[in-house]
Image 1 (cartoon, helix red, strand yellow):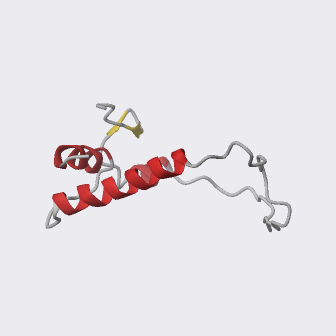
Image 2 (cartoon, one colour):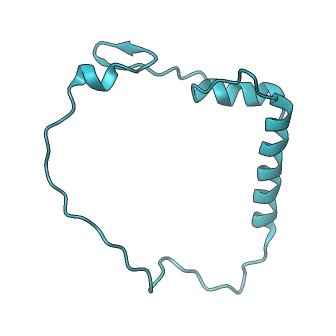
Length: 92
């Protein structure tokens, strides 16, 4: 990943790159991507597939209906809106 790709990712995420070393960020992204590649190279041929952890005890709260957030309140910090909805930039 190069600096241009870092700028693109930050732009899509609406994150600021001001006062940040883009080269260091690119290096960190590359370390993560290298680690992911190593994970994909691990031989899992004889490993039994696990779909859930039997000992996990999730505690869930009951859902309770509440009043919805007003549309104007939900959109007040949006970068861009159109027709009362969030507007997204789909340039990929």
